[in-house]
Image (tube, rainbow, N blue to C red):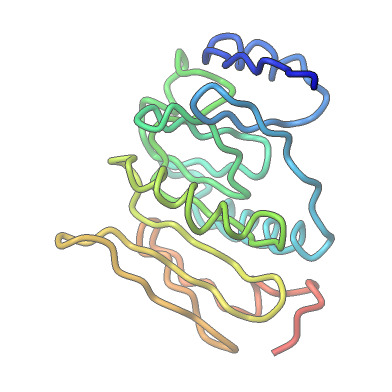
Length: 190
């Protein structure tokens, strides 16, 4: 029997390798995981959310990124690539802030997929909750008009579910996003 030794990577080595890599990888406690490709529906939903957020936040103190911006969760020794992320924090927006990851997002959006749903719902959700800056975590279902918004409240996290023709309230950034806009051109019917 052959054995292979898997050596954990430190964060600095991960960041250096990721900058040179042709594909994206997430990092969790010394281990590196290649990212799966996305469907057209997935990409459309992420783009629709990012476009609405970018238009809403333009000219203000917050910035929106889609797909290629990592979020560092120091408490979990992890770097993730959310589908859409918003930060309004000087730690992320200052000229001398790291240019390839965020540390203090207030809104994170993940579009679910069969290969990542369990990770998005469990691993990433548990990690993201450890970010003191995070106010909302959003899961978008690409198979039906269904959006889950987890909000930080004074007493913990609360969940709101939006379906059909409702309007998704993203309180962290003051945006009311109609499901019809979020799911536009995605091929997902009511």
